[in-house]
Structure formats: C-alpha cells, structure tokens
Amino acid sequence: MSLISLARRGRAVALVVGALMLVPLVAEARPGGGRSSGSRGMFSNSAPAPTNTIPGGAQSFQRSAAPSPSVANPGMGAGAAAAQAARPSFARNMMMGIGAGLLGAGLFGMLSGSGFFGGLASLAGILGFLLQIGLIAGIIMLAIRFFRRRSEPQLAGAGAPYGREAYGAQPDAAQPAAARMGGFGGGAAQPATTPIQLEGADFSAFERLLGEVNAAYSNEDEAGLRQRVTPEMFGYFDEDLTENVRRGVVDRVSDVKLLQGDLSEAWREGSTDYATVSMRFSLVNALYDRKSGRVVDGNATAPQEVKEFWTFLRERGGEWKLSAIQQAA
Image (cartoon, rainbow, N blue to C red; front, top):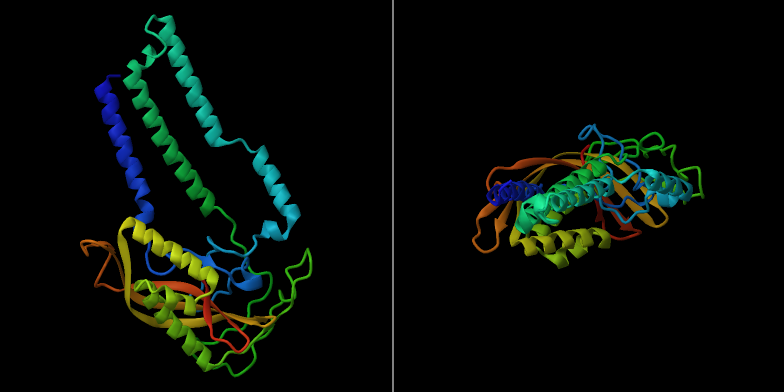
C-alpha cells in the first residue's frame, strides 16, 4: 500500500471520527440537555408512575447523586463486579490482536530483508497505519459506551402507583398510599414515606418554575438557577453552561408554554415534600455561535414539543425547587 493511499484512508477515517464526535454537540439543548438528571429521594431508583400525559413512563437517571441499587445492596454490587471481572475485555483483546499483527508484519519484513518496518511500507506507512487503528479503536470504544449505557436496566416501581389528579386541579381526596412505602425490602429498613395532598397553588408553582428555570438557563443566570433548583441540579446546569462556553455557543430558550400536565406522585420523606409531575410543553430552542450570533443547531423560530417528568422538592414551610428532570421513555 502506497503512502498516498494510506494518507487518503487516514483522512477518510478521520472524517468519520469527526462526525461521530460531533454527535453530542447536536444533541437536544435546553435545560438538562435532553438527559435524565437529578434525584427523587427514596424513589430515585424507581420509575415515576405513568400518567395520561406520558403513559410510557420515564427513563432512568443518567446523572444522579442518589446511590445506585448496587450501593444499596452490597451483595448485588459484588456479584456484578465479579461477573464484569470474569467477562473478557473486547478492547483488551482487540489491542492484543493489533499488537500481534504489527509484530508479525515487522518480523516478516526482517525475514524478507526489508528491515523490521519494511513489512508496512516504511516508517511513514506504519505511522499512518497506527493512526487508522487508533481512530478505529476510538470509534469502537464510543460505540461500546453508547450501547452499554442504553442497555442499563430501568427499574420499575415496586408497588401500586399513587393516585393521580389532573395537573393544575385541586384534588378532592387524599392520594392513596403506595404499597412500596416504608422501604424497598430485602435490606436495611428505609425511612417511611407518606403520600401528601397538593393544592392548586402547588401546581401553579410547578408551571411557574417551568418557565423560570428555562429563562434562567437561557440567560445563563446562575443566581436565578440557584434560587430555583437544588444544589445537585445546579451542578448539572453549571456543567452544561460551562461546556457551552468552552464550545463557543450559547443556548437560548424562549416561548415556553405548558400544554398538558399530570401529577405522577407526591410524598413526604421526613421534613421534605416531593412531587413528580409529567409535563408536555412547547418552546423555541436554538444554539447560537457566541461570536457571530449564527444559529448552529435547532430552530430560532419554530417551536418544538417536549415531554418530561419534573420532580420538585420543598423543605417544610419552604418554596418548591426543581430536583430532577427525566425524559419520557
């Protein structure tokens, strides 16, 4: 293979890798970036109850400070770790195969009188070959990480869902307790939770926060975000905003309108109240280049429709704050 052919193939592989590396940049913008982030107290590892607004339920958290099931159950974590250790590493085997191939090519070159690197058409040839292998290995590792993340199990609720009322309507009866309350079972006893009854003012607060959180995120107003979200959620938003600055873009959100909503669950843990609501809303969202003001992703005029579960919490006597965002399953 000539040096020119190697260079051309290297450029082609580089273009493919570049296209794959751009995938995260054109992912959904808006607060949360189209990911499931945050915590739902004791129920962080349980899916919210489905509603009329989002009957298919929610995705499990991709970013969360809540302990994973393996942490809550050490035996399960040890078993998973042992299984992972016993499973052969695809990347390790692949790199061993590549190394063996390079060694064989070098030895063949020596035996044929061309030198150790002669079998790969000179030093430039082997460097080009190694570049291609490295890029291909990167693509494979990205694919492995993507499918491994997609294959993570989504935990369902362990008992019957809470009673649900139309979003924004004041319930006329206390919501029934769920069978799963009082602990997850199979381990140390968890603090009991109690279903709570929400009022019209609570639903109005949820709708107001939907608009205010989006506005603060769009304006990169960190003080405004701190007032309206939990420290955990602020950390995720701050991380996303910092990444936007690094990439030289700004995420603008406008015209946020709630179209439909339902209460999924509402409960109390100690002195903290939680409420998870499903919301279908529209907004106008686009990413702009910070220097030129040019739209680099999204649409600056056409509204898009979004379905998400938002979880809010409040300390006794305090204001509601955003605790989690989960995408529809």
